[in-house]
Image 1: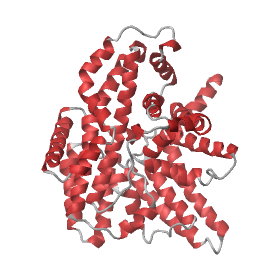
Image 2 (image 1 turned 180 degrees about the vertical axis):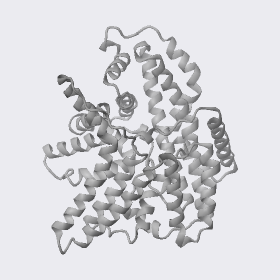
Image 3 (image 1 turned 60 degrees about the vertical axis):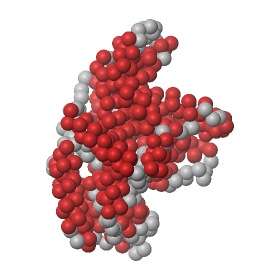
Image 4 (image 1 turned 120 degrees about the vertical axis):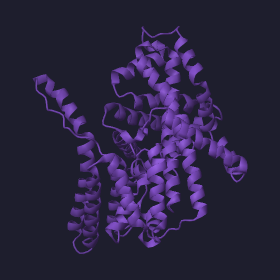
Amino acid sequence: MLVVFSTIEFLFQFLPLFLLGYYVTPPKYRNITLIVGSLIFYSIGSGWYVLLLIFSAMVNYWLSWMAYGLKLKAPQRAKRFFLAGLIFDFGMLVVFKYTNFMIGNCNALLSLFHVSIPEANLIMPLGISFYTFQITSYLIDVYTDKVKPARSLLELGTYMCMFPQLISGPITTYEEMLPQIRQRSVDARRLEEGLESFVLGLGAKTLLADPMSGLWNNLTVIGFESISTPYAWLGAFAYSFEIYFDFAGYSMMAIGVGKMLGFELPQNFNFPYISGSVTEFWRRWHITLGRWFRNYIYIPLGGNRCSWALQTRNMLAVWAFTGLWHGASWNFVLWGLTFFALQYLEKNLYGKFLERTHILKHVYIILLIPLTWMVFAITDLHDLGVYFSRLFPFMAEDAIKGNTRDVMLALENYWKILLPCFLFATPIPMQYYKKYRRSGFYLIVLILIFIFSIRAMMTSENNPFLYFQF
């Protein structure tokens, strides 16, 4: 599938051909080349859904101008156009992402009467969760006078459809991207930095995330009922590394391609596993998503500038929406509410104590975050209960306590990947890289990462990025 950055087709066909066409295009016409290339990129992976993307850009362009033009003369009409835009954008997201989830829950109730509603034959468009948040932030910012409407559909299309960030972010605002959309430069330094970032992200995906997915997949094939407690904990750490290096790797590649095109995309990850609290973890994990929820849900609801009860309500709303945004399943709702509970407890019970510790707060995160990822990864709530009974043997009488042969075999097969995962989840390697990145040694390191990544892509099954499904 071409929309995966970590494929031979993307690296040696689409990207070089697109960059060649982009660089030979005069600067004032590069947005056209970028949009055409982005639509080709998206259509190969999503087919006719590219028409939905184009239609969404056109609708939001028109509605933003109507809301902006009527704001002073007819504020109520302007508000109706603004609300129509929000209903359209979130309506499309709900229809494609949550229809079957709602039908399934209705059928659970209707089963009492022995009737059911047939499921809709809908496939979720790639990236709809991400580009919906981008375009709604534009619409909200226009309506609240933070930014003027796009001068042309071309400008708005460039912001919405730019292929490096279209599928999985980073989520940007129109205000921060507008200066770059209108004027940007491409030079050897940006190209070099972009290639470096891309190769590092490619290595994170193919050399760390994908092997960890093998460990997790092996565990799921065995079945949660059959695994020992040590293997269950190893699986939780494996999935934690997989999702981190998978998504952080994608973000690095997106930022790298952006640099090659002259764009500066925002940082999306900042070594979240070294955090000392859940609150800090979410300041470091998926930074641009957290910023979106803060700016467009938490602050408009009142943020911290209200009573304790309303602050709690605001936090609950943010985490409920965060869980639902990630997936149409009850485990994602539970995952979001889990983080609400943890942040509430930190804020009101033990957070100040954690701040005063040096080692305990990091142990807390190292042990806690993998447990939350299990709620995220296991969509069936019964299977989730089984898995936690394996993590904590005292939770069930049938837990397998003594047999550790499974974990020993897994460690024998994967220890050479687990150790680098622990190391590269810390800032230490990046600190050395930034210090010595101009040396010939690190150029050799980059070349080797690229070669081994290509080898991994050619010799193993292609694994799409995990966040594509969200």
